[in-house]
Image (cartoon, rainbow, N blue to C red; front, side, top):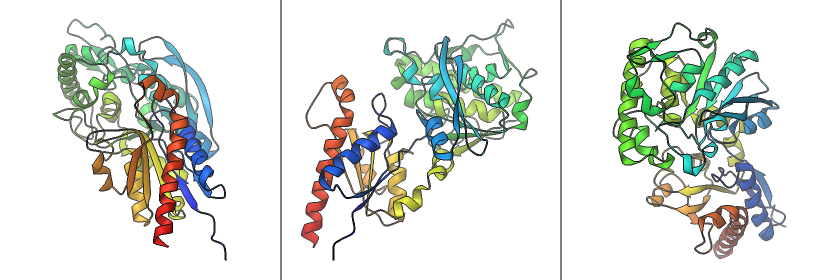
Length: 386
């Protein structure tokens, strides 16, 4: 009797500035089919609230993308979108209007970038009739605590002279008055859910400015300036609004440069992103059907276990008793911690040292080759076990 084809679940994240989650899944499948052409490969590209979230959820639910022009992170208009899902929920993907990819490397200054466009997209979703709005947080290029988004929704942020604050997190220290009289009234009537990484908090030693500010271009002095500004911002919001959570340290308040805190101040609920996002793809059942699970991300390191896709996939696969392989562009400090999360084996896709631009350009090729090598190793072990 012949063995049934191998059933392999391929559940990767995207590779930032290189591959979407869908492209990563297809590259892995290409490599697997070189070894096992008859394998039953289930492609499950996953999003974490960052780039590609709106498009992926629209596709998964029979929804559609709604194109818009809104204010980008540098203050100039950008072409963007939100999604209307099959059930009428709107998805606002902050990365599509205020993401780091929209900020050229030579202009990356998280003290100056704004989330104003996020508020404009929320208004657009309300105009489209949505009364349930899911805001996906991730891949942000901002650190303004969501101040720009609140301004776009009608909140006035004034300095000591009564002038409106300019955009950017560095201005928050000058905030003297938060005027909510002009707040868009439909916000209070809508259900707004923020899909965020619960490990990200606004303030303190592990606050968002200190953890992510340098990745967005902040110098050490700017990091401290932004941290102080976000502390000041949280205090003002708590005084001006009936805030339901501790804006400084509640889980998720630091999401997307503090956007989580700003929206929470308006009554939005901060939810662990995978609790909100993965229900749309029936992930647990699909992992349970597989013989092997392969996940992937641009980097595996000590941050992976703090709410990243490979760790979430591994946790769910372990619950189903399924082995997990993880592939990554780079392996960083603390990568060994992912084995405790349920990853059984991991490796880099880069076959030899190459310049970063080349690695980004050839990521699909490297990922396919790495998947082929990994499956060949798995099959050697299978033969030995037999």
